[in-house]
Image 1: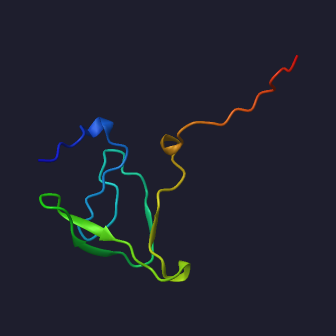
Image 2 (image 1 turned 120 degrees about the vertical axis):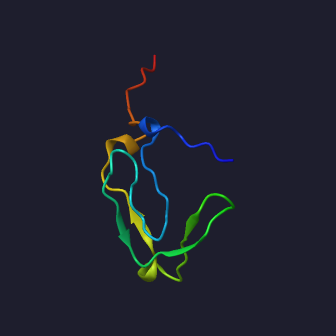
Length: 83
């Protein structure tokens, strides 16, 4: 049995039931490029997306946009004093 996060803890929620869209409470915009194929997922989990391409020109990919919650930290460069 798969335990699902509570809605307030979900950043995105994808069910992949013949479409790729955010089903979380936030409903963030998602842009799909290419032609995704859907296949049966693991038992009890519904469908899955099958990504396959032979080149970057026919690749399928998902753009999650500019979401600050996807930024995992900042790089800080500070001088190191040598003495």
